[in-house]
Image 1 (cartoon, one colour):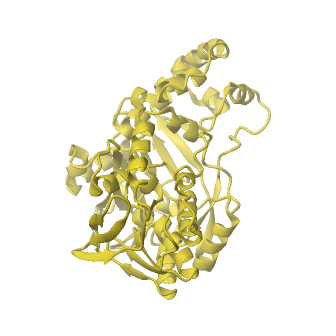
Image 2 (cartoon, helix red, strand yellow):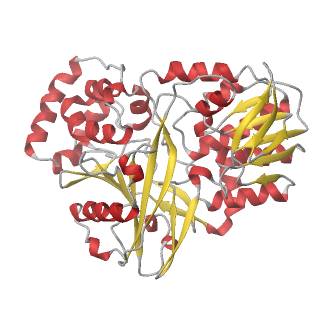
Image 3 (spheres, one colour):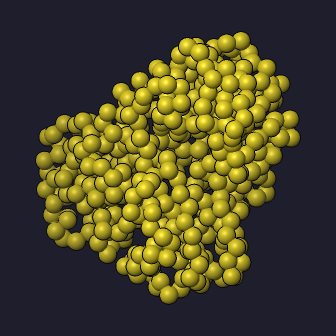
Length: 463
């Protein structure tokens, strides 16, 4: 890295960018944050909707604050104060008219599943101890550990719908970090009517702001400005002036900003493209369909995972389950998470048509769609999930190598490092990137791989 900069351009006012900006400002370094949207938060923001019955709030997906980092928790608690609630997550899987615990637990499967599925599971368990785990791809990771029956029923259709590709073309990294039953010993234990049937690494309790997850980043933006930093909104990054080893300026919103150093949270492939390289990395998009309901509660579930392949959404969530202040008193709301790529049929469908389809989904799930107020809107995330294909590690390494030629550039965050990570990890990356600039030490390789262990990443929080 170059010498300690006097001024840093931070690209993106999301979790990583704002956390980095605060750390830099506290070290006496000037900061300008460039944000393409009209408000901060990025994918962690909250949208406010004024309905006939009052104010509804919808996040961009389902967020919650869990962390092992006591310092990070202290920062969030100081910023949000008494508006930071402690909530409990309760989630289920809906499949073929039945409701299963989430994460999957063998005891619950035995009690809930139809006889045909149970016969298949028992047959698989009879032969699995004699087969070796295979990590070639997502499909082999699951089938070699849990058998073809569980894979076909609970993973194949849902995973294909979520990613838009055959699970055999998806990296096993996704399974290793997301599936809470870790090995056959766990499966055997959960077949016994003793002990705790909850996977050890599953976080039920979490912190959540009273008025939506985005409040954390609204408060962080205020802190950046209070410390003397500048946030420029509606300033999408359009290009760079650069040499072989240094970025000299960032072009955003029709203005050129000189750069001592650049701390970027923009997506890895986009940054490669803007700096003259080529990347084969891609993202999966999400459309969120939001609708108020004239009922006090939809259910007691935070999330309902929708595994049936013919249901367009992958999850149904009720924001009120995170905080009762996400909907007017006596009312609630629903959000359908619909995976689709930009310019696809589901992405382009007008809201009136989507409302009719959404009502059909609710009815299929046993929820009376006549409770809908007739108000609805969509929000979109073009880069919701990094698409972890079987080739992604090689393509990611090539992208990082290209960007590492610029001595005064650090990438961090979810899109910036092309990693499926939680908010606290993204914020930690921002802190690490800021510290690297302050200490004049090149820590980019450490930042890019921060918390990349191939174990379940949703762990119990210090909160």
